[in-house]
Length: 85
Image (cartoon, rainbow, N blue to C red; front, side, top):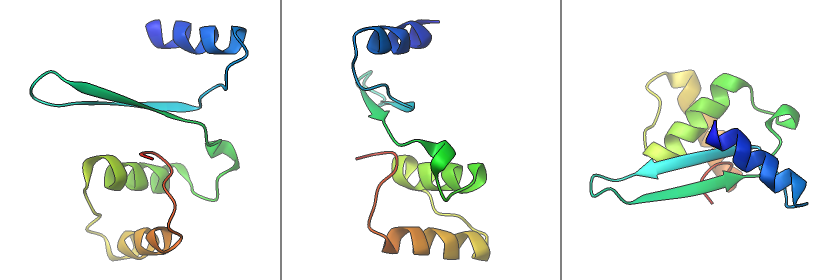
């Protein structure tokens, strides 16, 4: 897969190894790629929280569940971005 080859190429050339990448395409065929360097294995957020944060930062959606809304508000108060910087 090309993504794995790209990641290996970064590592072999002593570049900072990214932990995740997000592709965003628009309807005109243009795209943007965001590389993330945060180690989510060391994150205070679990996988479900990270998905919710990704959806908020990249897609602009907010959760409907009240507990998730509170988690997202607490995240926003920290004034950080995990995915789309």
